[in-house]
Length: 310
Length: 247
Picture (cartoon, chains in turn yellow, cyan):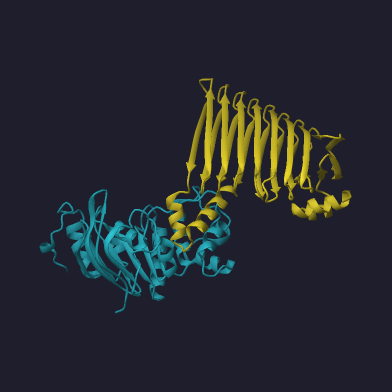
């Protein structure tokens, strides 16, 4: 397949075909370690360096630039086997604002690894929003390692959602760690569902280091079949008026196993963090309400899980 | 009168305590019935047993719906026969859109039908269809959504547990209006209540006391007795069958 064919295929899989007709939407498509398609807008700079065994992507949104429509990113591989290793850096400069819609597509994965080492700097009073949606194949032969270090400057706002929208999770080893300066806001959300023998590891870590920093870590996991899911949430607060909340819900079905390890650490007398977690099977009242409307247990459970992960 | 529900010699114990004692009941099709009584009388337990809810499946006696013994059927099997249940405190579902919640139960899956049912319960569809059935809804809104989820399945028998619980007058008036409309359509409704206002919506009532049926008659006859002798309960929930004198 040439670059055009690969782009078309990835766009089709991720249902983003229409973006090519819209010049006000920036997009970047990367297949394995090659940039195959890009369209940029003023104020958005992207430097791509291709190597044999990895690719580097450095994206910068310049100071005071506001990009109205989400920038579409697509990272993927069409073949059944291989490794995609990415080194990614996002620099969102002071007062800039950007939203990324990132699709990671591995529709035919039988033995694929997707490794992303990322760093994100969100500048003073800048806003960064990142929605990462994964499309995997049905074999479960995929290993995904999104590891990212995030720095929020004073007054910065960071929001991310990670979700698997299609296919098997395979192995997902998600590891994001953010440090937040004064009056910055961190919101980190993951939603993943595993089937058969999938293995899900989620580590969400936030450090509220500046006065008035706020943080919210949320994870929603469904472990179906023989899936094993481990969630580690850690939120620390070491400055006055830092406020945070950690929220974890994990549902099991069949022989799924879930665990949650929350760590909340406060080292300033004027800081405050709360935590809640719910693990187990589907809530009985939710289930019985739907069954009293005529859904069987399987249908009711699936609907509840669908809602939780939506 | 045709019976839609018949209960014969129903007894049920929870944690070693007998909650329902030899209940016999015939519920006429197409009417609004009330099961009335003080807290702890066994009203909700009775409704839960009829619906087959978890924890209320082990009883002695028989429950017939449309002439069929439903005692061994699961909740969903009973629901598909035409029975449904509205909770005193409706469930919440994180992330589940009201549209999807309604559609899952609906006999007609088109949006127009869902919109029509939301309008019946007094909600503006465009404000609610794409909201989640979660904690952002008020108590009254949740009750209305629950009622809409009942209407979309067009059941034959509706059990409503404490329909006035935790809601304002406007919501209650709307619920009463829906009850009247369903009655016009010859649906059968059983209201579980200790409220006089709810009891007044019924054609017929069964008065429960300490797991027994103390009296059954028209709601008009039950109301004065219930009002004068059951609020508060002067017998401390010990039935005084001899003392029952209906108006």
